[in-house]
Image (cartoon, rainbow, N blue to C red; front, side, top):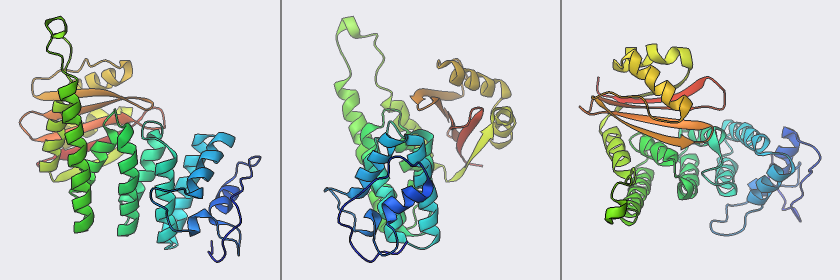
Length: 295
């Protein structure tokens, strides 16, 4: 993985879908540094982005995302922060926020949990790009969730501005999407006010837990953690399955939104005691669970 000399051009072996070919294409063979050995060119051309796009076209996105995560793990573990940060930025630039799904989320969240500020800063830049295509609210939710956890004050300020800027855009969209005409007065308004309420409560709730659970384990987990009635959890699971909100409880406000691979449900307890969200993973029958709570 050494970086010593500049290559004359970027080449991609399109006939072999393997991690070693992927790694060599980005890091370069010994004595011939690849794209990740260069400084990131913010706002300009980066061969690493081109490589990831070409790899996906020659093979598929799953292969590209899987090998990106494997290389990300390797670089961070080896202490190659510069190359690791470059890789995260490249992946974020190569794909839109509405096409990366659970695999992209896995890459992002790994980066956000690293101790090196440079890695988390790269994740911030990735989010800046993905938030441009965030109709589901997934990346805003993750940005807001990370805000309280960020220990570097400079980065914390950047995450705060990122979240607030996105909320401002949602508010503007809601204003322009509201139709006062009597013929359209029964149209649903943009869901951003509910989403803002959900995120605002999240910022107040400092205790949190997240994980991945099988369907059968969800009712017991939510009952034990948050006293969520089993019948309500089953209603939420049915809502996720059919893509229509059938769960109802006078103590909660719910948001059902489409995400890659299905739907996501966000729940906010009206007394401010907790929030939680459920969404599908890349593995059928498994769910990502995010909770914030007082107790």
